[in-house]
Length: 225
Image 1 (cartoon, rainbow, N blue to C red):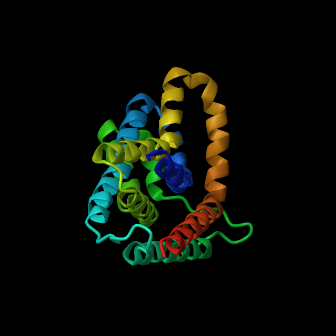
Image 2 (image 1 turned 90 degrees about the vertical axis):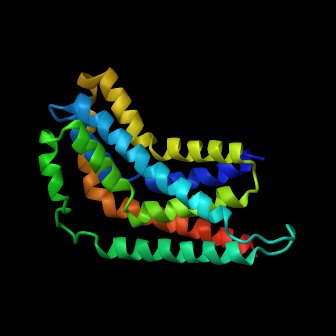
């Protein structure tokens, strides 16, 4: 059955979808003079950067030895899930320790100041750089791959599950880009307000999501035993 797999994947997509700095980046691009080129370019790069690790990790997870007795414990997958849970929770601690002190303005990446001069190609490259090498995205992609590969569904169903995961994970970039292309004038002010709030609360949002996903993966590991 594919629906239980998708049901387990949806919470994981939040850790990628609700990525404050990524949303801030796409908003800045949509507010820039080259919005109609940089917005789609960033979306394509971000989508590729989310898709590639999931596909690779599913192939790797499919090669893991599985428990022959479906009613017995799957120790291998449990160990993988425990390790992923520990890494997610560790990353949450690291994120929280980097939070700005009271009254301190959050530090934003220097490349954000150059977004107004971005081309389609640079925006696409930034989308890849913000997605592929990020530890949080890689851990979530690995967690999703364990769920997909461990479900024992046909290859076609795995492809559908991956597609649903990617679509949900990139939705917070996809929706603003499409909406801006349709109604740019009316969205400038709300986008600017959202950008300021996300920049301020980036660490808190990311930390909470990592803890939630880490606990979910810990529960999956316990369930595999």
